[in-house]
Length: 387
Ligand SMILES: [Zn+2]
Image (cartoon, rainbow, N blue to C red; front, top):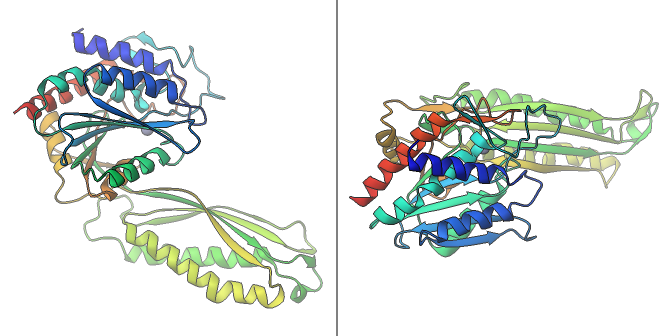
């Protein structure tokens, strides 16, 4: 094993031992990474969330100027509850060229490689800075990345490029759909089933709302961007659950619809949201309130993960293709923080060690060979930045 690889493996073992499940604090792991990066002379900021239980880390090696390259990873991992692991998920085990542990591929492997390489970046980086962005709460809605982007905006710092090291088996990924989840609640007026006109049947209004979702679902097909490489190429809508009412002879007083859409472009999400807002305000609510002025429809946003739109001009993609020697790129079905960086005007690409097939599963692992490939890519990046 090269020194860099054994440093990375040791660091990964340390990172896995922090149980940074999304509902727990990540502060210990962030403090550890801050210490490791400060040792190399990086300027490090630890940015706490409102409650102070979690933090993002943003570190810079090189001059504090615009135009830098962000290496990004989320510090949180998914729970191990109800999963059958062969060993302690928070103690890394090496077996057959693989490193097992929660977060090994999603995505502490990338964070370990980037942090282990920090001394080399410190030695070689000249004009173009490299930044390390390690975030919280990716797995539950990308809240950390959103806060981080706000911080960069306020600071007036404009990095050019984001490399998000989610597990892609080191393939170069330049796009994924967004994922927006909503819960819409209908509050009507219950009553006896024999006198429907005296109540407001929430289930019936919920059904009309779902009907509207179906119409939108069709309309979205026609809006598919020309040459879209997504599968399917348009924005999709899914009604995941419809619940409401009590029994046969009672007017349903309440109902809930859980639904999602996966936009291929931000404009589609705006189109759907404004259409539904109009439909509720101009059609459903006036009808409901004629009988019961307190009747209401509310929509709660469960999560909105911005999509990463493939762009013709994408420096992040071009650089990572050059660094990895890839001659093709791909799109993926899973969401990442890359779209949030893109929304800040940066070019973004996803490329990291390990396979998404192992993510979120028991006995999650990253192959050591994948870590080596990631180190090789970062090593070429240090040389590029030294030139
Ligand atoms: Zn992930």
